[in-house]
Length: 92
Image (tube, rainbow, N blue to C red):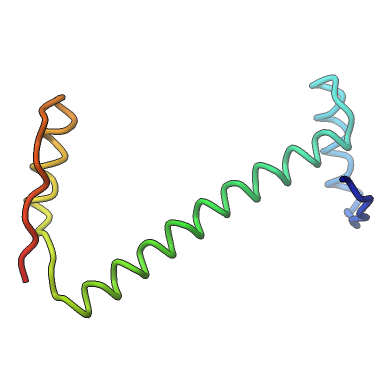
């Protein structure tokens, strides 16, 4: 279901959107919907990453378990090289 929503734009931004729409042979409406959809998707991913980081921080505070940068970097290098590497053991 779609619903109409209004948005107030200053003349400069509205002109920029219209110019881009003409260059891309799209409607201004399409450009704005696409921009909003991309923004929301990006921000949802950022929020998910932030939530993961907060959970990891909480877990670290509770357990003290961690990897050093060197341990994590070495493991990731093996994975990048295509090796089947077990993750290193956390220590606290």
